[in-house]
Amino acid sequence: MRKTPSLEAEVVSQALFGETVDQNGEEGDWFLVTTPDQYQGWVPSSSVAAVLTDESAMQRGQTTRLSVPLYCQKTIRKGPLFQLPFGVFLEVLDMSDPLWIAVALPDGRRGYVQKGTLSFSKNRVKREDLYHFVSPFLGIPYLWGGRSSFGFDCSGFVQMVFAEMGMLLPRDSGDQYRDLRAKRIENPVLGDLIFWGESEKKIGHVAIFLEEGKFIHTSSREHQPWLRISKLTDLAWSTQEGSAYPYRSFHRFPL
Image (cartoon, rainbow, N blue to C red; front, side, top):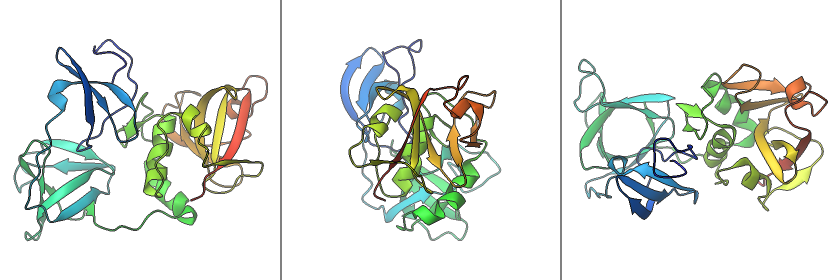
């Protein structure tokens, strides 16, 4: 999703595979769309399909791996159509095959994923299970505007984690900071959010507190452009002279 209808324009966010978006405008080969988190941006019209409802869909399944190959046939030998990131919802058409699940694609085609790559559980991630849940994402590249397991930015990762915990947060770190559902605290615990910025009005980074002064986040700083665990005492995040940001605040959401 871009700020203006051009490949030269800044990336502002991403619309994920299978996500339902509202079309709010059109210019040339571009659509102005709004994602479920109420974020707006321009995407190539070729990447959007009209919603085609398959009445034979049995249920919805969610991808559980960081990358899930989707095939056009029930064989791995001819390669996948493409890879799906974590957390994509798919309409399930048929589960009778011992190895494959048939799914409906947004453009009306039928695709196949291997059994074991979809979850049908409605259980949410609990605060006490957070460390276990986020650990597999370590090392995923930092990507400006990213909100999938192919690449996250700081607020995109936080938004994904909280969605798995049952709460939809705003897209940007500044809006997450100003979310009235949270209260400011002094002593963070597992699952609390940490915000940094030039000031309260200019928030530039967000992370999830883990334990013992550690937090998980993604940024392009410190020559480590990937999702990682850092410490509040690390110079870049300490708010001391030479740090990335002079302001820091802890917030707790009612999970």
